[in-house]
Length: 338
Ligand code: IYR
Image (cartoon, rainbow, N blue to C red; front, side, top):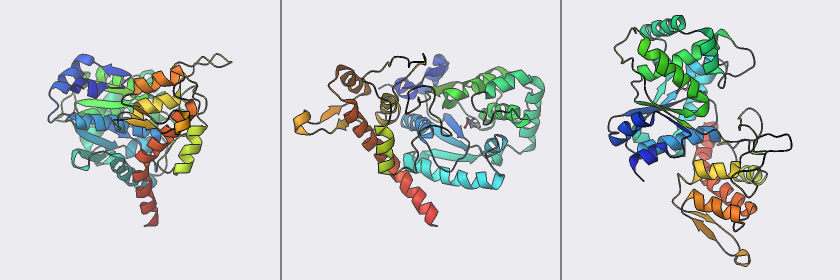
């Protein structure tokens, strides 16, 4: 796979292809990041962007993980002390998931977001950005129904982080795209207090998984079923066995006309195949014996043709997810014993 294909595989959106192509051609010394509001336990959504960071490390980029403690505070995720504690747990789980400890820089937002220049730059953006624009950028990130003042400061700071961390590329789930658009529009127009470059940077957006049980709408860590690093092998088995998995990539809408996706196939595509060269589906001899797949498409083709039964696909998915999660689960257990 060439560098550009590796950098952009499974991405829903690349802004812009031309800019990312130029970076992929010469990744040495180039910095890319994802920011996360710290939470105690990684869920499969975090793991999906982490998988993209692993792709980027493989392609030769320097990876920065922003533990966005101030952002979590602005989004009402707890007291500052609570957030700091969960950030530390999060770091350990990312490393257990497979980020290269030698090539990953972890940065706390609060280590630079309280500096005078950063604060003044945030105020400059508050002056230049309409309330409406900031609220739109935040719509898919905001926790809680009611918009608070903090919710409009949040995307401005996120747009500024890309400048202050001297990044070449921003990565995020599709829910972050409007913040990245705000960045591209507002940053080049700034006067700016600091010596950092006030230039627009490209971004890559990863897909958001569908709801595991129904395939309708987005998987959410706050409602519905999600897979987390705390799950036991049995939990994973149970959740994946209960997942929506018709024998097709393109399920029909449900009775109410809602669009549906196949979340089992999505997890194979976005989380499993990027991490394993071959996926083996174990089956007893009487049912045709084991099946082995070198890529996602051939597995999905077999599911559609009926060669691979959804129950067998789920069994294999649970096993591979368990393998990816097990190291993080151990790290969490050890932290809890301390
Ligand atoms: N908005 C992210 C958290 C976040 C991401 C980045 I990239 C930042 O620079 C700051 C915060 C979320 O929804 O988790």
